[in-house]
Structure formats: structure tokens, C-alpha cells
Image (cartoon, helix red, strand yellow):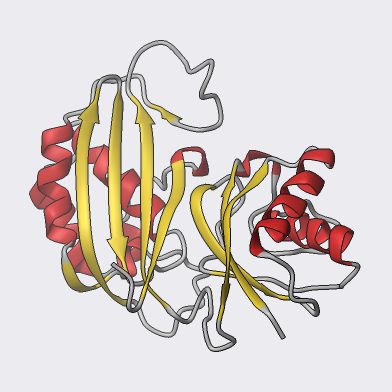
Length: 251
């Protein structure tokens, strides 16, 4: 059975998360409906990650098995045509055949997230729903200093959602970087995998550092406490993007 890998971009504002849910608009549901529309086949796609309600993606990776051996460009164009006709805020960026052993989730060895904060007095007009608007000035350098304590293997219980279903709170974070880009502050996190709402939890606590309410040492102490009660306010979903997924044997 032919298997196709494809990269997806979406605005999560209109969806109740990625994962298909009965009677709820989801990214997965929109994609599967588009595939069924052109192929006549009922399908279930697999994805590298299940983003929450309101979370966006510029580099989500998925795969699907089809009964017919279609040209990859035909699959991509047909999906995009049906997604556009349905008015979905979802776009397929590329498509390629892969082996039946390749899996969008289980073959992945890295995931990259970007969190965008608009740090100015004026509210967003063009990026409404796509950034977290923080009016008070943020110290990006202090946030970056605090973020360096996240690197490596840690018990991330402090930044783990109470409903997280992961077997262990132990995760290894490869990259934690904070930088200012004009009026925006960008937080970049890279790891093999993340706990439920880990990125939003870390971001909210780092903003406490940026506002001067916490010091970098306070942030480090919160991490080392391994206590969810030590987490700062969780950042909203608006500014979070899944920007890429890496795979074994790929650069």
C-alpha cells in the first residue's frame, strides 16, 4: 500500500487542536476530508505531533496510506484544491512517497517550536491570534539567560500539564533560545519530544523573568523543584508554532 509523507502549514485559530474529534473542527479532520474527497478512500493520517487548540504550524509532518499509487504532486495538488474549496486554513507544502516502515511520529528524532511574543503597547492588527501580546517591556537577555538552565536532561514536572499522559517527566532539551526581533521576542525550543504544554509553560515562566518578577535563579529553582505549583502563568496558544520535524538519516 503506497505511503505518502507531507508537510503541513496551518492556522490553528479556527480548530479544536490537530487530533480528529467528533463534531469538532480539527486540522486532522480537514486533511482527511480532503483526501477522501479526491481518492474516495476513508483514511486516517498520522502526524509528528498533536498540537493543542489554537496552536499553529509551519512544519507539521504527516503520512497517509492510499490504495492507489498516485503521483506525489497529484496527491499534494488534490489535497490543496479540496482544502481551499472547503475554506480550510490548512495548506500542504510538499509531498513524497516513503516506505511502509517510515512513520511521521515514530521515525521522528526531533521537533522544533517557535513562540512569538509581540512586545509593544499597540495591539496586533495583522497578527491577531498569531502572537501573544505583552505590553510591558520584556528583558530578552534575562529571559535567554534563564532559558539556558533548561538545556540537557531534566525532570520537567514544573512545566508539565496536570493532564499530561507521558509516562515520565524526564526530557532532554537540545535548544532553548530567546532573542528580540524588533517588536517581537522569539523563543525557540528543540527536543526529541515534549511534554503536554511544556513549551507554553516554560514560555510563561520565562516571561516572568522578562518582566522582572523572577530572576534567572528563580527560574532555575522552579525547574529544579519539579513541582507544578512552581510554574508561572501558562502562555496562551496564540503565539506557538510547530516549525519543523527532523528524522533519522536526514540532515
